[in-house]
Image (cartoon, rainbow, N blue to C red; front, side, top):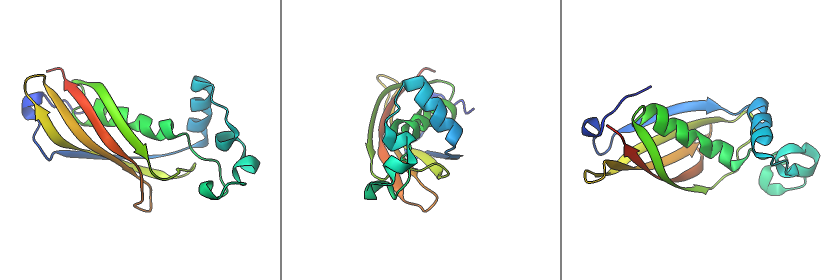
Length: 140
C-alpha cells in the first residue's frame, strides 16, 4: 500500500496495476448486490446478444470497483478518501479478461487537499473498457 501525502503528490504521477476477472468474483458480486440479471449469469441468454460476443457480461460496477483499489492502495493509497467517481463503460468485459487499471494526477487543489485522477481500465488487448475521473481527498 502506497502512503502518498498531499505534499508528495505531483501532477502527472501515474499508478497502474493488473487484475484478472474470475467466476468467483462474479458470484460474490451477485451475492453482495442481489443482481442476478441473466445478461451476467446465464450464458445461453447472453449468447443471444451480439454486443456481448455471445458470453456473459461482467458487471460494469465490478470492473469499476477496482477504482477503489486504485485510490485506496496505489494513488494516493493509505490517506485517500473518495469523494466522487465519474465513469463511462465503453466496452464489455468477460470472465477471464485481464484488466489494467491506471490513474494519473490531473489536478490538485491545496485548499481542500483534493486531487483529480484521470482513470482508465483496459483489457488484455489494450482496449479501453472504462474511463473517467475521480476526485479524491488526501487526509494527510
